[in-house]
Length: 281
Image 1 (cartoon, one colour):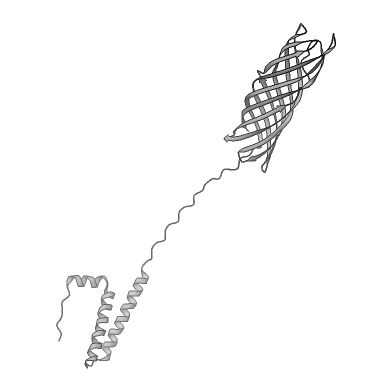
Image 2 (image 1 turned 90 degrees about the vertical axis):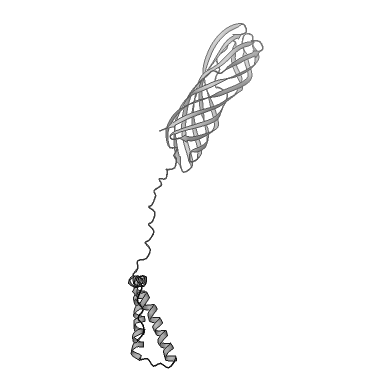
C-alpha cells in the first residue's frame, strides 16, 4: 500500500475555503497519473477512471455555477437633475417715469421790419445753458420693435444776447426759462438695449429784456415748434434704465414783442443733449 501523506493545517484550510478548486486540481492530476500508468503497461480498471473524470466535470460545473452566482458590481448612482431657472426675456412694454439733465445751445438770425420811421433791422441771437426736468411715457413692444409716446417738461438757464442794427437798434438779453415736448418714439430692442428715433412738438416760453431805439422793454411770448432726434436706452438694473438722447428743434412760431418791430423773418437752430434715468412699472 502507498504511504499516506498527512495534510498540513494550511492545506486543510485552503480546501475548506474552496473545495471545488482542490478537487479539480487533484482530479486532473489523477487522470494524468492513470494515463501514464497505461502507457507503461499497467492495466487500470475502467470504473475508477470514469469516476475520476465525472468528479472532475462535477467540480468544474460547481465552480462555474458558483462564479455565475456571484453578484456583479453595483450600478453607479445617477446624478440628480439640477433645475436651472431661465430668466424671462426683458420687455419694454409698460409705463415709465424718470428725470433728465443736459445742455442746450441755439443760434438765429434774420431781419425785422421797423416802424416810425420805417426801415429794416438785421438781427442775430444766440444762447446756451443747463437743461433739467422730468419725463413720463409708455412703451409697447412686439418682437424686437418698440413704439411709444413720451412727454417731458424742462427748466433751463439758457440765455444769450439779442442784437439788431438799423433804424431801431436793439440791445437785449433773450432767455428761454422753460419748455416741454410731446413726442413719439420708434425703436428696436436687443433684449435690454434699445436704439430709437423720436419726434414731435415743442411748446415753451421766451423772454426778452433790453432797449429798442432808446426805449426800454421787458416782454415774453409762448411759442410752438417741432423737434426730432435719436437716442439709446439700456435697462441696466431691474426696472431702472438709463438713456442718452439728442434733440433738434426748429424755429419758434412767435417771439417776445419788441417796441417798433412789427414783424420778424428769420430762422433759428436749437440743440439739446441730455441723459436721463427711467423707472419702468
